Image (cartoon, rainbow, N blue to C red; front, side, top):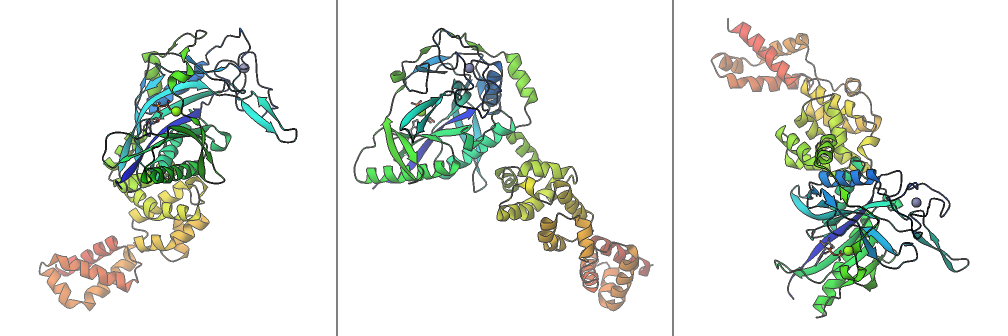
Length: 480
Ligand code: ADP
Ligand code: MG
Ligand code: ZN
């Protein structure tokens, strides 16, 4: 059989971080009795007129700018018609064409340290539906409209993802970005960040996409991974047996970790989209876009570029950006020790492996950023050897103690005082007349041998740079 590869595109719904709903002033996201937070607008009463929430537009535009897309100066709301008991209007108010944002993308950090640009097709605003709640006891279904009218953005990717791993990592990175920008609170368990997964198979290298299925409404990264892997296996088996894939909308059963048909796929024309006559076009001025750009923290891309320019390897940079919170920790530690290279190495070699093995977030570590900065500082000043730093790191991490104090208590600090160093240097020079002669005769390289001897004599406690200086002093006096 020909080799097939997966093609995956995501449609992500993120709940915008507003106080009130998209078209009315009912509060969003507060725990309340069913139907406590509804009004004639979000409950779809005849004749009620929606009014657009400005804050929602601003947050949507913010997301578009942060994702490198174009904020359309002019976008439209449409009615997307379908019937569902928890959709009181009989339509969802969504944006078809033009949406608030077009294009853009995200540089996905891959596990091997490389990157892959995942293109976005569009970002549009829409309102959420209410909820149907099944009352088991009395075998009836109730409708709760508290969620109806909650502002969402939908982010639609191009079909650029190729595995469950990539899809999960993409979602984590996207959620990280949007929560950092406070576009969304992004709480998965609250359904504030959820996605539909589109997936098909195609012969390796082929340009033509295969028939896809769409798995609806996944609100956990793990489910996304499981659903994709199941669907890849299912479609592969169908192709292998000579069947065609049917374009379908699927539901993921997380208890069985399998997908199940929900309905046959609907097309845009099935919804009979038409312009929402009750809402004027949405306009976003160039000034607003410029103002948003001003307030955005530097993009991950530019932060990465800066770090690489400061001497960090791409591997270390990706290591920092792949672990949520690691970059913030690193930047905080830089305030205590402004050498990105030394600090980045400590992060990649000691700190990050340790927090990963303990399942902690960087912010939960007892070893705070200033303390890690101090550790780097001790290394830089030669007060602590690299080996000693690595040796004591486990204890330092567990206790969160002051690095200098701990190193002192363990007898790991380096001797850099001139007194003992000069004593050792004299001793070594006296004990190695051959090498001393060679050095004085011009073989300057022999110094490193002598430094090694001082290190041995001091049982590793001497600061090697200072030891070299002490030796030079002693040898200099001899040459006169
Ligand atoms: P719809 O709105 O009908 O779901 P779109 O064309 O807007 O369809 O695409 C929705 C998502 O499906 C996008 O993320 C897109 O990248 C993805 N997609 C489209 N075609 C395929 C395909 N053949 N295989 C995998 N994903 C696809
Ligand atoms: Mg879709
Ligand atoms: Zn309302």
